[in-house]
Length: 86
Image (cartoon, rainbow, N blue to C red):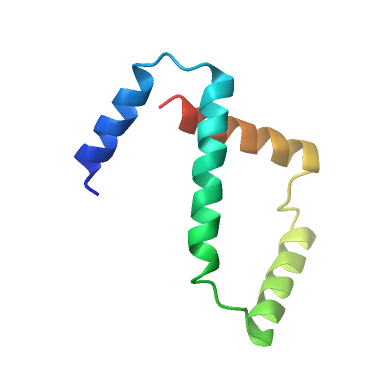
């Protein structure tokens, strides 16, 4: 689907003057659809990939590159808000 077609869908949705709750509901449904679609194409990680991700995470932790759960939740809410209000 083209960007123009997607933009038309978006503008059509905005014409309904949706509440924040309505937008959140739509966003959750779209994300669920993406998860279902991706579930059929996902491949398991190899042990080498897992070990590399763990090593990278441990390095981030040592370097102080992390968020508390509250900070992560606030970050997610901010990004979802931006997505829903575009």
